[in-house]
Image (tube, rainbow, N blue to C red; front, side, top):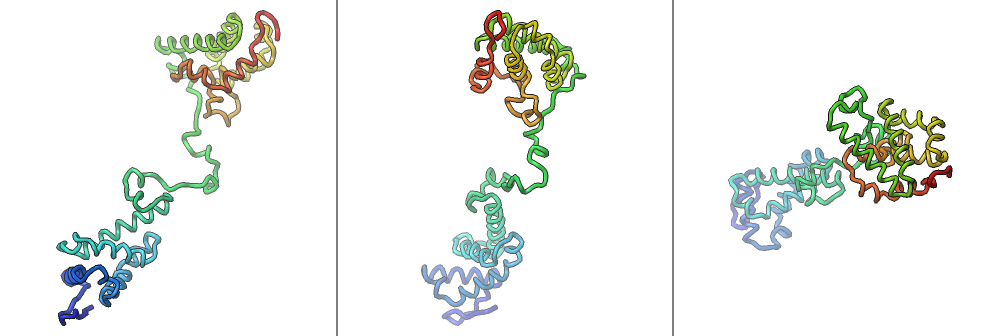
Length: 283
């Protein structure tokens, strides 16, 4: 495509040499050259047609790609480049990718160009998938340790030390929250022994929940017994498995949570304190 300049010289802006000459002339003409020059309008129509397929590939309108081409054509680096059309094509491709990522990430194109932002996946609604979120997201998956493994059976001295320390911290927690020391120690030790024998927190909870003999020996009410089991072993319902309430005090201590963190758990503290039995008598 050839057009004649005011001097009569042809400009074939479909080639890199012709585009360079056109860009230099428009730059020298002044800031309103792109608005009034007929060849400038033609080159923009040519750019829209040239990059239409690239724009559609990224879900954009061809004139959005032409707008990106217009922005880069006005840059000095494009006018002085060895291959101006190559520079324009590369810039339009990057802009189209950034526009698509920006629409997917619900952010601006400028932000989508940044690697630490574009690395994220597009947001999803919880209803976009057929299966519920807890069924496939690893953050909601938690299972008890295999009781056949050496570490879970307390085969090492380090494991025994950790378990013993967790038990003592659990006793201290109940004592600090108003439980008589001898009841707190007897209750926590009994639950730990049952857990070691059964090897699964949920199964241990169900077994101990029906153990009226142990509750009678501790001489505590059913509410206090239930609170003791929930606090130590966690809430038994599967929907609580990956939550703090489902983990229980013993597991939280074993994975490294200190006693001061447990004392800042208002729900846990309230449950234990309200269920505290009176010293030496059934509440």
